[in-house]
Amino acid sequence: MTEHAMTWGIAGLTAMAVVVRPFRWPEAIWAVFGALLLLAFRLLGPHDALAGVAKGGDVYLFLIGMMLLSELARREGLFDWIAAIAIAYAQRSPRRLFVLVYLVGVVVTVFLSNDATAVVLTPAVYAACRTARVKDPMPYLLICAFIANAASFVLPISNPANLVIFAGGDMPPLSRWLSTFMLPSIISIVATFLCLYWTQRRALAEDTLAADTQRPPLSRSARLAGWGILLTAIVLIAASAVHVDLGVPTFVAGTITTAIVLMLTRQSPAETMKGISWSVLPLVAGLFVIVESLDHTGLTNILSDQLAALALFSQSQAIGTAGLLVGVICNLVNNLPAGLLAGSVVQAAGVSDKIAGAVLIGVDLGPNLSVTGSLATILWLSALRREGLHIGAWTFLKLGTVVMFPALILSLGSLLLF
Image (cartoon, rainbow, N blue to C red; front, side, top):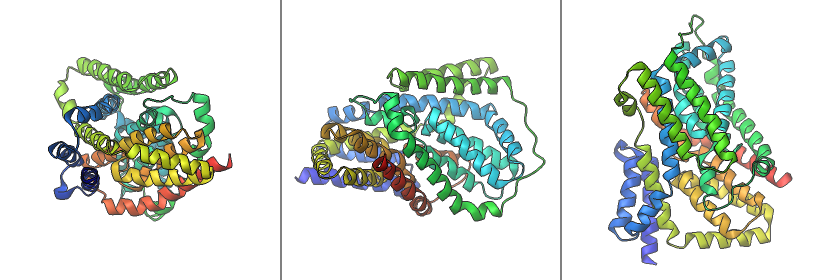
């Protein structure tokens, strides 16, 4: 029992450190430090720790592929070109630009995943704000953080956490997936937009967009990078349809596209590699080890028994309780490892599609509460820091409370009605 208490204590302190970032050290340092503490106190053996790291293998490959494509597109000027188009369609209206960015965010998240929205769309939105000389780019950048989670359960490929949840289980056919999640997804997207727009309405009313923006030329290398991103989206949809893990296809697509562009432009890969946020990988690995240690305390069996009992008592209570509880917990340990644990609990409990759907919605949408709730939001933070921007954890939490809970409650409610 003492060992279990120590495991829980280390896991809790690690989660807190990842959120608070003492000494301004990166999140990855604290996640890895927590994992090393578990090994040092022999609360988890080396073999089990490696097993936990290995569970994130597909996620690592997926992230590397996406980050390669994003950095390549940024360096070749694709984002600047997209930004100029967005400004032209906005016609000097901050509100119109806000809506336009939101719609683009929905499309990118649905077909390229929420992590792609963080690493691909965020630099494009910042470039648009810089081109339009907006007073405060944060209202538009916040869209990238919130829509990345709000639209992340439209399709299985919209969020790597969806794949993690069904690891070791049967991924529902696309028709069953859409019948379960289409309405909750629409509600999530609309509710998130309304709440986010309401919180940013004053900043948008005080802003203006420059009128004399010019569209930069689209270079051949930038065009190739764009085609690489588009083809990657097609590959991901095809891979999802035939139940193939997405990590390898994404990694291959990103590597090939990067190699072709660098060869054509005769550039060294060093600068591209330098621009990638590699610290995300040990962060994810450390969090997976933390969850592996929690699983060894018997947590999965305890939670599956509780969920099965609640489902027998009342399906509606199980949907509401599981969805809200998982949504909040994801902000303590990040939704990728939480999704792995939640998937094991759902499979062990043998609950209905609607209860399993509530858990998935909690894993995907719940992280909009905090800056460390999802990997997509952490990637978004990295993109902001790259541009010299910062948003505090407390500031985001206050905003997330207003935006996340209405969307989550309404989405879960739609599972009860239909």
